[in-house]
Image (cartoon, rainbow, N blue to C red; front, side, top):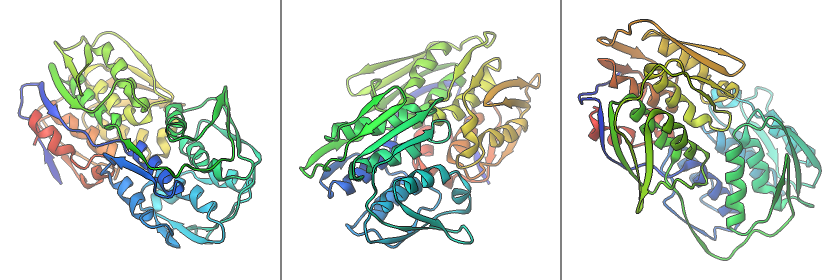
Length: 409
């Protein structure tokens, strides 16, 4: 067990260095491979997911056996990329939990384009025979995973006749689809997106050298906004984090205004501050269908400080590294906080009063966002004992180094 304690006075004051965006980094690595390694990517993410993908794509020839470990984005992006490698065969595998997560909608869509993909008899890996895929009008549900749509968009210029994709409403995590298309546009790949329809023509990937700087990670910044919500006062400076961002989780700066937290860009850093604790009495509601990665720290902070807050659009949290709704529900009950979820709508109730003078033994459920969110509880409870902190390296390897100057150890 790892003991996490907070020794400050509830005032968050300091400067933190975030990791770079793994969402942007992972998309750029796929595009860089398709561009013949012509992109010069600065500030590439050091997150474990990105390291896994970078290692897979190190050479011009992808290895025949690909272990994605627990990285869902890597698995789905590589599934699409392998499908267009004509004449090559691959086995795509990963952890038991990864293979249990939804992939069949993407597999079906690739098969409709002509891909040769089969599960092994024991479902321990996918066998892929690379082929030249051919255009066909596709229709995908928008409420499962935006990664399916992004995976198809990334390979679309290589599909004979291009890609025509209709996305059925509701579309969840829409900013991640926009991110994919915006990055493609930035390197010279054209697309159109009207209402629910995406069209990407068959076209050459650019091979002219281009330099791209990856933004720092807004999903990681959300943990510091959560700390600001939990604190009495806050003044936190973060480098290289633009309010106008490719990343949808920049919306956290807007949500935080309802809790007295302001965000101002000064030079190359973002300054978030709160002058005094916001009142807990007012009921607020947030639709988070487009922002799954900010939801867990946000819900955790509100569960302590603003229990009348409600959230919706979160059905797909059940299909992440863990069933995040159930994981958070189980752990918060240990401190007298109860989550009620129905059809993705979450409400909170508290045992009154909360017993803050206690040590709490928590499980991370091997989920990086659950682990980091639960660590925030040490700001209010005596200490948090957490079974696994290694999972944090999936997205934020230096998390504890960054919260230490704010009073945590």
